[in-house]
Length: 279
Image 1 (spheres, rainbow, N blue to C red):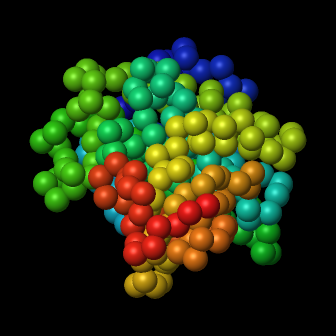
Image 2: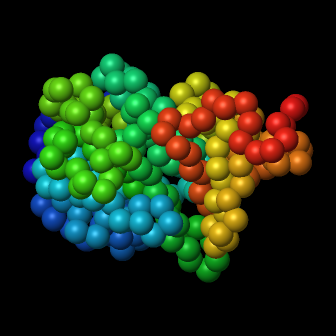
Image 3: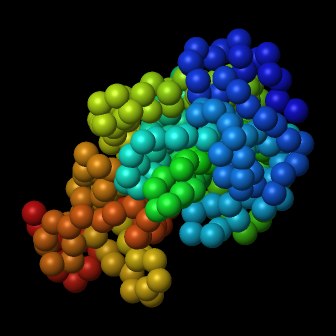
């Protein structure tokens, strides 16, 4: 189990992570967090050593071996519209990315919710809302990080897509310390959203460490088979993706509507279609 004292020794927050419940095994930390969100304070966290039904974006399964990684969900109660879920994804991505940097682990953020090391996924983020009378009751921010998995712990079919911190550094990482760093950074960015309704500081990290800005990528719109090849220009102040489409026109892509994919570490090719797009 996670060592409570080691987390608290590194924690400087006022409410994020100050209360948490942990489980040896659970179906999904997000599912549990949503279930208890009505009766807990903001910032409470659900931690698990293992998930048997871990959830990723678009209904994918998150592989969850016991005792080696971080599986957690932060319960938030923002007084705002559903757009907050999009913004919180970027806050979480910035918090994780910055925390990994504090551990001297270089990483990139693949919009909107993946953290990559050497082009492979090391962290996934999943924000889910609970509603009451068509208004936000709570938002649960699920974070899964591959920390101390060995190469042999990763299933063969995803070894070209997934990695752990240990595989990159050849060292064990103290999970409790990393958890505390993430909570500290998360609260810093979340307070800015609550107090000034902006995520500019978090977006600065997301842009600086972006895996796809100024790159050519494929966008696969959810529910459609057509794959579009576009150039990513920027991330907007609301966390949307600004792209240059096939017609050479700027276009906004909203998180949750698309899946961004690429080959390897995202192309630097000048063109991915017949006529090169020139801005």
